[in-house]
Image (tube, rainbow, N blue to C red):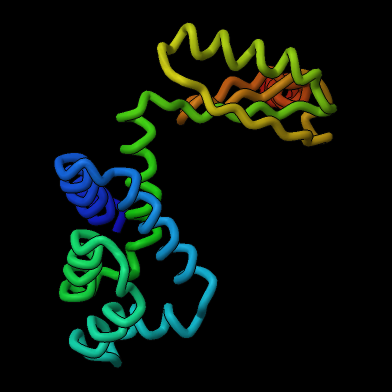
Length: 176
């Protein structure tokens, strides 16, 4: 399913980019996915094979009267191929492609206590300088970290927490 979502997301992304409608389609994809996620009846309607393709397309047309025609066409293709259940993964992949094209890098900082905002901003700037990307930084407090920090930069995790060191020490003692 994930590979299918990547193919559909890349296709939608490339069309949106070529037409200069990347932000419009991104917003509409997000709004549609959120509406679908928040309404069980909509999910049943669009995901169930009980409803015909024509019924689903008609419902989609009524729901998205003012939407970009290219976005509506994309959703109709998903309906025709019975691929609507991958829509949430398509959105995730589309967002990743968007962030990559805009050189945006999501960084998540986790610590045991609230860190000084100036320190967090400084870490974000340094990561941005080293990666050449614009960093979108979020921080979170998790007491189970005990001390130190855990940094998630894209798919990379740097765990410099006391919890990780204690876990490593426990494994070493268990092997001895």
